[in-house]
Image (cartoon, rainbow, N blue to C red; front, side, top):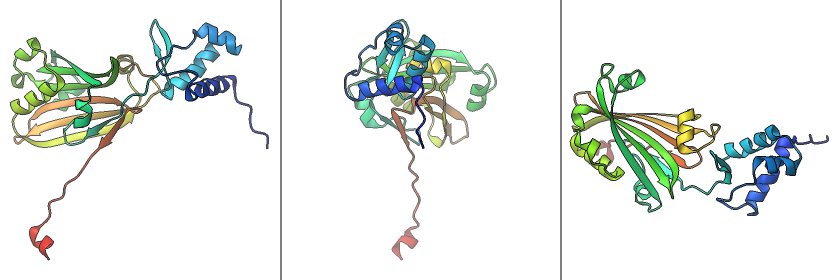
Length: 247
């Protein structure tokens, strides 16, 4: 059987992929303009863009608005540790990985009010946490806390990510339950723009609720981790009956 002839889109994607793999196009290098590439491959601009979208979905190149297409640098993989521990310590200690935190007051609406089990329009403090690796967006987290657990000083005194997590741990009541829902989906247009990823690149989305011994949700978080740079680990500990263990 004669193998099918690859389309022009696939042929262009294969050629660029090979040039990246062999180092002829290096990480961080800007590709020639789309019009130049279209002329080089003798195709229309839509066909050329279709080929580039294949490589964008594979995480090999990225398009920066107003600047062009670039070969993506290899991004460090991080691990989300279940049970409310967020990112692993090695990732947060990494000198190349930095997290900026912006705190603001918002009102609970729609799914957010349901997640926090509060009436609509209840005041909340939102911590928008964006991690960057060498000034490039890496992952995104939104942490929500009822306003009575977050004094107004947090809006005036910016804290590092580690400071925020430590501060929240000290401020909130003892936890009795951490509930996490993990899904794989495509990013929203806003998430794709903030993280500078292709809208075709799947993300690991974690929705987390933390409740105290009275059943009140004292913290909720929405985390978005692009699938090309994140893993998740969940460990279950079982209580062992000492009498059974000694038999």
